[in-house]
Length: 174
Image (cartoon, rainbow, N blue to C red):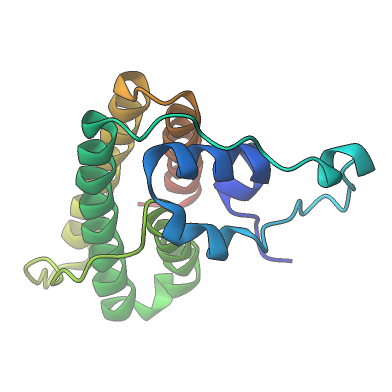
């Protein structure tokens, strides 16, 4: 059974959707509508019948800039993981999960941005070490973003993404 996305495990769908509305990234809500708990539990009927409140204020310029910056960083990390995965088929299974996680996080932030892969690494060990450094920097950037976000929902989303990536990275023998 495939592992659940860190966003799917940690943040209720309604909370994520409120955060996306508050930060102006409603374009990604369609991708999140299908998110469900992997545990098989069901939500109470009252919860599913109550629509989330409409945000009363526009997203702040700071949060909009933060989302765009982190969307670029997540997209670059996604391209890096993809390049390493393609060059090291023996690690493809472990890296595919990390690649999917980046794609889901980017989608929650508005979608992947087209970026080229990083410079080629011929040595597999060096490529994995560089990947670990890239992931560690992204985890730190997401955590900083969570602390500086004006929107509580955005802060929760970023903190969840940071924690999820930390878990993914720990599971990869890099």
